[in-house]
Image (cartoon, rainbow, N blue to C red; front, side):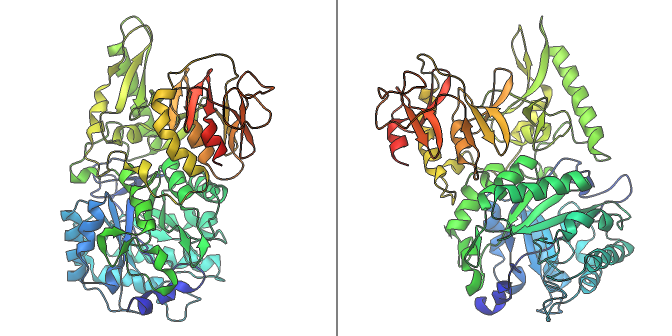
Length: 579
């Protein structure tokens, strides 16, 4: 049954996934999700970033426990495959209502998609976008009143290869108008062309033309990333270009770690999604056909038997457990700067900056004060002025959006830092207790599919706490070439991003873990050392390690992994020799 059901996924691009239309909100005071610039806001007006998985409900209707199982792994969103009856057995309004109730019971957002139109224009058995739109109208009784919890993905990957841009544009515009004319006000989600992968860049060029068909201005877009996306540069270029060109929300609605034997850079997909504050939904929980069994996240729908891909997605670096934040409509703490920001992203920025100035003046006692982000255990980081979510780059340094800062689990959040006085928690930092479904920090132990640098990254974590306090002599500071941009390497932490010397910095192991030609630059140069810090070097008194083409000083006090000595990062001799 599994082989038959998803064998259609085998062409060139995955056809297993849900396309979702996000229900649009009415006029200026709406109920439910809404779109504001590049952000998706939940029913309380708070920023919401999807983190979750796809579930093939229409082919496995008895596996309804999958909703709870996926939610229990930390997901805040589940994309659910439905059929409008054109190609597979139609999911009735009652069935859809039950799925929605299960999503609500497990406090996840339900993205509903029609799968029958997959591959339109190329796949002879495919339905149409118009037929999918009619289906949403037909089951309106199950959808109306659920705008806080449901996003409508109009049709999954409904345009195949070799089709015109006009087909993608015009058929989606007509579908949006059909749905709106029926009184459905949910946020709508539109899938990209080319089986969702948009390698011809139709959606990248024309998304705004589709969005203007929505009388409620409440449409967002989804790209599916499989073997077309094999490098960080390709992934980041698509995401950054889409957001800057269209100022509309984007999610990665499907992706995997490979597809039909071809590599997919899932690590970079997760990292870019986190960096830019966009949603992602991995494909898929279970049930893929023989072509694509490596895309299963669980073995036979068993949540206690995750596959390598499932463990990576849920428990890995930048994965679901580490980054998902529950929608505030389910009782999560609201973010103070976004509750009134639904009209535009710029208004939310101004409101958040005004709140920061007022809080800083109240906490200052003889010095200047500024709101900053206490990001987990790291040193305080600057808050972005021009964006409320994700990570940004302002004033020649990295910054973090206020909403993202406050969405973390634990005791972190926005704090007020004063020079010449003590720092105090800002009034808005209370939202850091948001009832996120993420786990603590299990991502560091994930069975990531990253390349060789991941081994050094995992080993370095054990040495970071002690090595940061070590000191000795000499050596220039290092910088990280982070995908073409230079950042200082942190002195007090070896992984993640930090804030030191009034500037953002990056941990040495995080810098080295990137794909491509980036890495740590600067500092001493010469040949690598064999095993001890007493080895000679023209760059200083310590030995030097040639770490995959880049020179780093050898540590004298750290025996394994990466350390920080002489005001710069260093590598242990044993780690150097292990490459």
